[in-house]
Length: 37
Image (cartoon, rainbow, N blue to C red; front, side):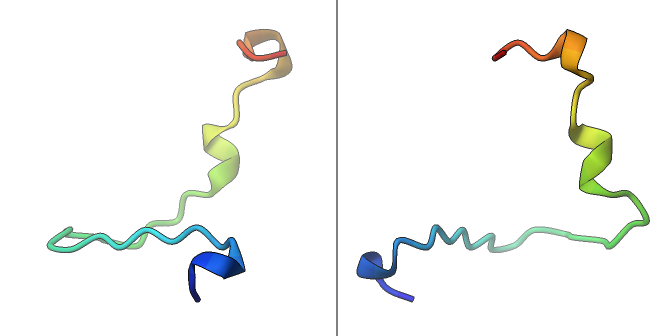
């Protein structure tokens, strides 16, 4: 993983992360509410 790989990476330090049963689909807005279409 380097700059030439063009793979974005984010490192979070000190975050109190807890796994949950949610999915990314809950974050997607319906098409009629999408501000970028």
